[in-house]
Length: 174
Length: 106
Image (cartoon, rainbow over all chains, first blue to last red; front, side, top):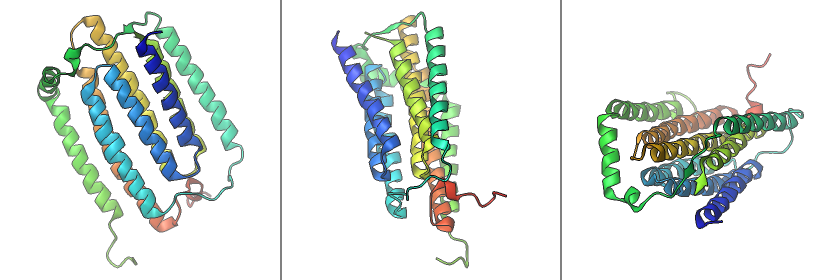
């Protein structure tokens, strides 16, 4: 077993364990912190796959900005825990069966399609240099300029939408 | 050297756990976090495929990585609007239990 495979297994086990923690934890704050750890693991996978820019975007945008927003809302609303008691008692077993079917389907398709699976070697040192980043920026601002601008408009609309949704109407009690 | 299949299997497992979280949890915030988990699993598969394609062609191809970048941007927008919705719902219902949101039920 080489070093990369050991690293992969450790990270994969951590990622799956933190995802399980997200599903099982009773407190929303713990769930959010589990998710942060999961995002960090996936960021390391991106580094192994030779995508340093995506890894950094993952850490700053996902594990940083988005999860801070989540924690902020959890604290603001004060809804760390929900009272126990299921309204739909059959929902949980049914959901587990449905998830098992989904996993079986996805696994079957992946094994069926990926017979000629390639081995992913570690990226060379050239993938982590400024040159690589410069090339990527060239592609982004030439070939994908329009999607990039559309994304900026999307973010503006989301920002305005968030403000409009949470704004109190005139005369509404505080 | 890690086969592409390993990444795809990990991505499938994480996606399934996200879907399971949406189905079994009642806290709207945790359901939302599970959606993020699913987006993240899809991104992982994207980057793994991009790396595989890069190794096949022998030169760096950034399209897959840029798609992930766009997905992250869209996820950020989605979280901003979604959390605003949850805050608005909490204001009227005083709960974010999704089972409580049954006002339209006949």
